Length: 395
Ligand code: KDG
Ligand code: MG
Image (cartoon, rainbow, N blue to C red; front, side):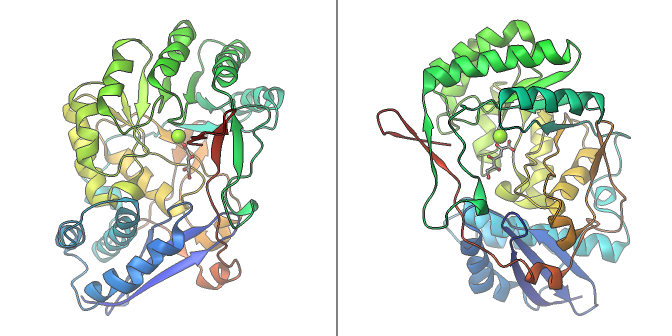
């Protein structure tokens, strides 16, 4: 089998996505997701200009070799753009492998290690009251056992992604002391509302300094968070150690990590409980299985990043990883965009708090290119924050 064509497909149903489709001379093709929110076209260019020419004529089953060719062969290594491009291609190659073996991806990864995949959904709402109502609905009507909250600030109504203006990021105000108080109040109110048995995850989204994160986490200790997500920025591993030593709250971490090597100090130091890397940022299926094995060595559970700005293809790959992992913890179910289902078929759905999927050979998703063309790509940015002194903060 030889690769004959590599296509990049940019589309924007409600959100921008970048897909990769790799076609072979056998008629089998594979699909992957290379979406990098805010930089999709740059990733497409890297694939079209530099990676597709190296794929044409290759045996699609030599996945590890192509991975190393892109990662080490480019000399510079890593970075979000390169890793997203590589991940999209890697997923498509595993999809081809599964289809040619007539096996679902999880079977290639060692087969099912569990029957059920526990998942959590993010509670949305314009006001805190709306969020509390929606959270109660998640538990009562949808049967979720674990939910996630991020209270934010009442004034922070910036639009995420393609709904915003297209020339520069939207700026949201950020007042740390108000957000700290708001976070603590929101968590306690949610705990009172849903009762003691529902798991609550809270996403601090890397925006707090270690002292602020410690303050919040200590206050929340009596209310037993399932885990606190990304309490601080990932750049300085020693800061994570510092936070870890000062609180007993479980920590989920890692959506901004771009390689196994970046994860290593947090794993070997036992500074986190759940590893939340994004498979599009760390190198697709090939790297995800190595990373999960590494985390298993240090008793860290997997909780792959699954926001609504990645497509059902990534959610499906996450599910294949989930069912085949010994150290699976929980899966974020961010599948909120109904329109994307017109472009991509397949992918998991959350039923009674667990993800289920109809497993087909390969990843089990397909792209409708005609539908994709109906939603042209629009440049969009992730918002940024500025504090009361005008200083830039991450969103
Ligand atoms: O594009 C950015 C999002 O993927 C991120 O903000 C979502 O933090 C997120 C999460 O945990 O889903
Ligand atoms: Mg997050």
